[in-house]
Image (cartoon, rainbow over all chains, first blue to last red; front, side, top):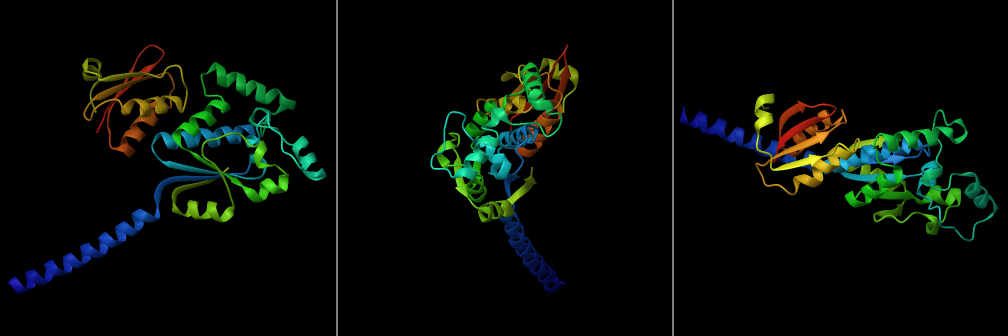
Length: 188
Length: 84
C-alpha cells in the first residue's frame, strides 16, 4: 500500500515538473506585447493604430509599431527637409502627404473636407488630436520602428522624420522577430 | 462588486475626473493616478465616455485590481475600483 502511494507521488512529481517546464516555456514565448505593422497612410487608420497602441500601453503592454510604405508619410515633419534626393524621390516627396496633418481619410475624404470634419469632431468630443496621441505615445514608451527599405523607396531621409523619443530604423526581420514574441500582432 | 448604495458611501482615496477626455483618455488618467494611491485604496473615475465602463473592468482584470462597480450620474458616471 505504502509502496503504491510512493510510486503515485513520484509520478505526480514528475508530471508537475514537466508541466512547470512547459508553462515557463509558454510564458517566455508570448510576452505581454503588442506588435503592429502600419502600412496605410490613411488618417483614420493611423488614428486607429495610435488609439489601440495607447490603450494597450495604458495597460502596461509593451507596444512596438512598425511604420512602412504609406504610413511613413505620417512620420514626416512639416518643418524639416530631406537633402540630396534624386528626381523620383523629390516627386514622391511632393506627391505624398507631408506629415500627419496632411493625411487623407480612406473613405469620404471629399478633397480634404473629410479630415477637416473628423478633426473638428474629435476636438468637439474631447478626443486627443493625432499630435497629442503621438506625444502621449512617447510618454508611454511606445516604440516606433521605421522600415528602412520602404523609406529608401519613397526617398524619404532620416533628417525629415519627426522627433520622437523612441524612434529607430530597421528591417522586416526585426518586426517579425518582435512580433513572434508578442501576444498580439496586428496589420493596419 | 458592491451595490450602488455601498458605492455611494464608500471612502475614496483618489478621485479622477476624466470627463474632459474621450477614449483612451479615461484609461490613461486612471493608469497615471493608480501610482499615487496605496494597495487596498479605492479609486473613483468620473467619465462621460461609454467605453470607460468596459475599459476599466478589463484593465482591473488584467492588472489584478478589484473592479467594484459603476454609478450613473446625470450625463456621466463614476466607476469604482480597489488597487490590488
